[in-house]
Image (cartoon, rainbow, N blue to C red; front, top):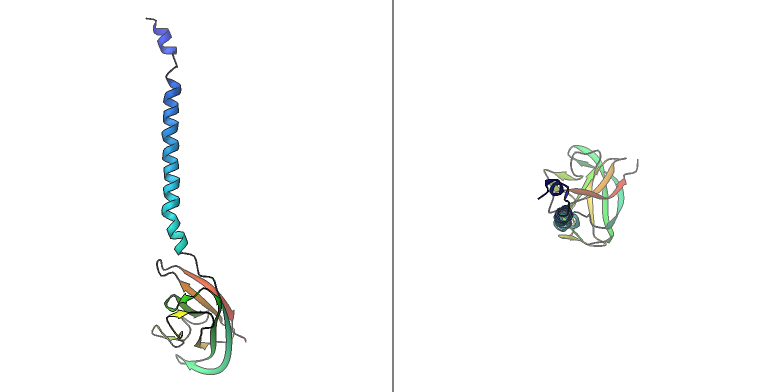
Length: 153
């Protein structure tokens, strides 16, 4: 037997490299498919609903938490039906929600669902304040602003 021929023999290299490449491709493919399948459900539930709102500001000088302010009527103009528990109305100049006292809203939606045409009045709006309709994801706590308007000066 010639040892020199044995060391230069490379017939087994090609099948070994082929097996290693096939295993690597299989592992990478399984990881990509697993990530896509497992992550897809989370992405679907985090999408904010598509809805449009209108804002009607009225100056009545009402008092809220010791400060005078105006009212805003928020009306659902169209789009998806929303759960009232996932919708909040907040102002840029107030701490927390517009028209709330200890977490209880002065403006109430007429039912547990907000359909097209449904409206609610909120108190304690200051002139020039930006009012936002905010949707909170019930499964994750993330929030999205789905409408905004600024009160007239």
